[in-house]
Every structure is written in structure tokens, then in C-alpha cells.
Length: 366
Image 1 (cartoon, rainbow, N blue to C red):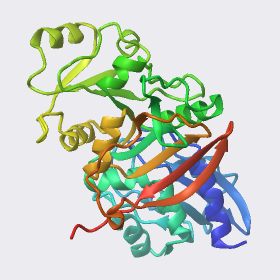
Image 2 (image 1 turned 180 degrees about the horizontal axis):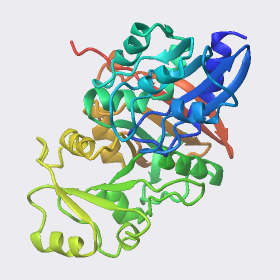
Image 3 (image 1 turned 30 degrees about the vertical axis):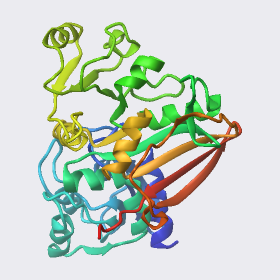
């Protein structure tokens, strides 16, 4: 078997930790000896044993002389768990193969250097592209301390997220909504504007699939959120944070605080609204590594306009609404050469809808 074969097994293992390990990365490890897999493991939950430790603990025999395949460089620093690189040294494998180095400043090649200095053969870059894709949220967050942002919205074929009367439930199919709940379960926070809360009264929890509820973030410059909204009632199931500006009413702030809702004052942008870039930085300080933005149109447009999004998931239902609320408003683009390009990575079919997922291609400003 090849290095690529075993690394693919490690990638499959790593994926099992999705939605449970953030802000840590998903990591899988496979131990091979004499062309036999003798141990497997993955990082199962933030704060618990890393993949390498679990693989060694699950090994059926000594790993001395074996080859270990790990999707991400073994850590070399003391955190919630001991350094994996030192642990591996103690067990004396012959070789360590990793998919990609860890950009965490506390690691950043030190783990592999430690192994090499102690006589263990190392290989870096096996299925590197797949390993990088697996942890794209982690890589952005650990390098910038700003969350990875995915924009998700459902629209009709003619680009409407609601009718002219504001009615939007439901554009997409039941299957597509289950997919949307899966997206919530693998992001640390879900973000909407106050208008969405007022019009649709969403719960923003994970109900249609298994998984954890994300932090619910409402961008509400003037604190217009109704105190009886669903996102306020069930704080025991999922926490809610409302981002406001200094203009929000003080009495309302106190009332929401009494209900267990966190109120976070953020500086205004040039439009007098919550500065989204500043909000993302604040979320990053709280170890929120990924944010799923679900609308409405003003929020989606602002994230596109300000270049704050990394990915899009666009659910398109085979329906025509005619006049209505458009998914994305005016971005000031007058030349098609300046349109925001999306690198399409996946197209799915769910309940008659088409789901396109892609990465936003960064363009250098002239």
C-alpha cells in the first residue's frame, strides 16, 4: 500500500471529529507495521487526547519500528494535553508521515524538527491539498484569529430570498433544510441580522440532525430584537449574543441581560451600523473559529461588499418568485470584470433543490 492510501484512512478518521473539536483542528492518525494497520485514532473532542495518542493507545502491539500517518503535524507544546511529538519519541516509531505542517505559532514545524533530530524519518506533504481543505476553518483562524465565514442562503431560481410581501417559508425543501442544520452543527456560531429575527423568528438551533447548537449571534445595531423571540426563550439549549452599537437603548440592554442574553457593544462602521469586521475580531477572541451567516439580505450583502466571507453555500429551489427581496443587494459593481468570483467545489441535489458550495476567490484591489 502507498503513503496516499494510509493518509486517506487517516483523513476519514479525522472527519469524525467535525463539529466537536473546534477551535482545535480535526486530526486522524493511522499506525502501520509490516503492511498491517495496528492502530487508529482521531481527535474526538476539544480538550481530550489528540489523534496520535488515541492511535497509540488503540494499537494492538508495540509501535516501535512502525510508520505513523497523521493528517496534521504532531504538536510540540504543552497545552491541555502533553506534546504528541514527545509522546511519539518515547514509542520509537521508524517513520512519521504528515499531510501538512501546523501553522500554529506554537508548533509551525517544531514537531517535525524534534522527530528528525531524534533519528525518526519524516515525510511532509502527503495528500497536502486534502489535509488543508479538511481544516480550512482552523487554518484561517489560527493564522488570523478571525473566524472562517460561510455565507448560506436559500433562493429561488430568479435570486429571491422572499416574495415582495416578505414571505420566505419555505423556499427550500425539507432535505435542504436538514442540510442547513448540518452546516449549523459544524460551525461555532450562526449569525443573522435583526430583520431576520423580527420577520422569521428563527430558533437557529440544530433540530433536524444530530449535533451541537452553535452560539447564536444577532447583528442588531439599535437593539430591535423582540424580547419574546425564540432565540431569547431557550438560552438553556443555545446561548445568544446580540451585537449592538452605542445608540442602543440602555434599559433594553439591561432587560436582555436579565434574560441571560449577552449584549456586546461594537463600534459603528461608516454607515452607522455594527462594524462587522470588529465583531468578527471580538468573536475570534472568544475562540469562535467559524461563523455561518444565514441572512438576511442586508447582512449577506455587507459580508460580500466588505470582503469578509470565505465560502458560500447557496441553495437554489426550482421556483420563480418574480418581484421580491433579492439575496444580494447592490455591491457597487458596474463592470462584470469586477464581479466576485466563486470557485465552485461541489454541487449537490437535495429534494429537488440544487446546492452549490464554493470558495470566494480573493481579488487584488487595483
